[in-house]
Length: 227
Picture 1 (spheres, rainbow, N blue to C red):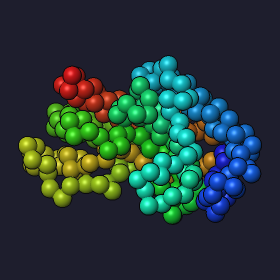
Picture 2: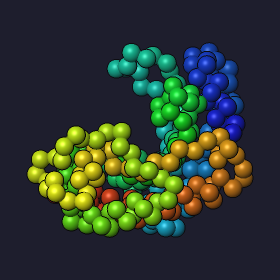
Picture 3: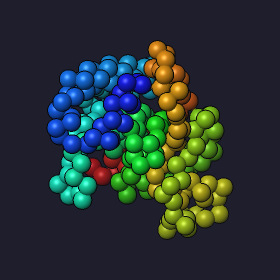
Picture 4: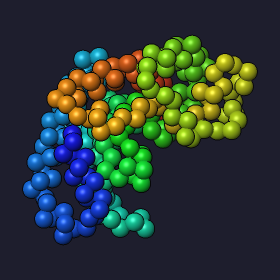
């Protein structure tokens, strides 16, 4: 992935159509590598989380073109790239496993390369279901967090108080106040180097599988309620 990151960094410095068009052939070659990696990631994750079986690369990857219609920033291209492996694909609203490459470092979307496992900005009904899961099975939830050694809870979006309708006298109050329910692990350029990147990435995500699967149990309850 070293070459992909280097391209994204150059794109950050030259985020304009003429430069990209002059380097389109290079990008297409790198994109093919990303897609091959994504295919391996899907297959590997399915070996320990069968809920993602049958996904395609298109289900889990993103276009490099930005949607600038409602943005003040009219830069035409993303300077990051991600792969999100989740049941039914990246837009289905389920918890999953996200591999993020950043070309702009601190200025970028997430501030660096990242492994992420969980729910991004869940629907209110889904978030309520997750909180109910924490109340009912908090010990399991906490144990699944501990299993993911090297990962930390994303506490970037967190309520100041326990949400209305939930008890504030449980050991899981901090968990109930989460709005982004996910585990994160920052990685550096050195982690991305080497021919065994896929195997090492899968080994990290495997540690988060019980956490993701418990979240998706709650997501499924919510979707059944919304039907």
